[in-house]
Amino acid sequence: MNRYWLNNLASMHNHKSLFNMDISGGMPAVIIKMLVASEPGRIELLPALPGQWASGAIEGILCRGQIEVKRLEWAGGQVRAVLVSERDQTVVVQAGETELQVELTAGVEKEIGFSFQVK
Image 1 (tube, rainbow, N blue to C red):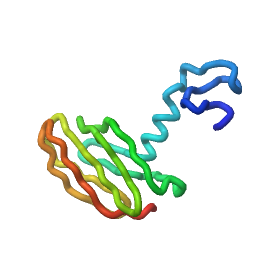
Image 2: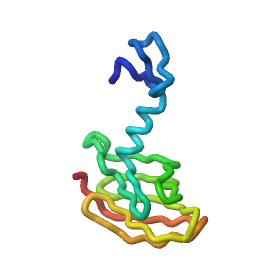
Image 3: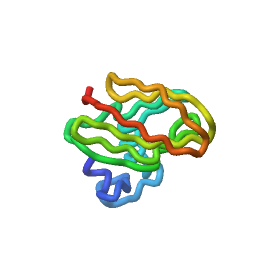
């Protein structure tokens, strides 16, 4: 991977010699999917969190079902997320073995938090 992606997540066809437009968004998409997976009515936080990432944060993840994870942060076994939905809806939010049923009101930020253990 280090041979074909630069520090700015741009990708190369050949080692540091030819920009690869086809996959230029591929690495960020993989990282986002490791941190948030979604389908309508369900959001899974940190489904494939690497053990080396003991803490971190990401902002602005768009999910299925017209939901944005405005901010996701984790540290010390705690997870905090701020969600906002384009419409009123109920979703299940999961992190590890914990699931929460969350009521979202259109346009209103909802902060959730809970304990988490890496799978």
